[in-house]
Image (spheres, rainbow, N blue to C red):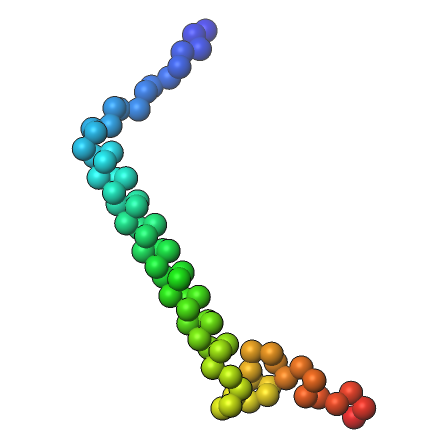
Length: 70
């Protein structure tokens, strides 16, 4: 019984490898930009204040609004 290394993967063309790396970098950059934009939107929403927001639907969920003695 022979325990050979099995079939090898075909060698990758250098230009294809470079193109794949460039594509991965572009996708990673897009993800980072989207994440930063989402963070900016979240911070902007939290900084907006509670002027027009309901106590129950705000980001803090009305903590302290409900009286426990009821």
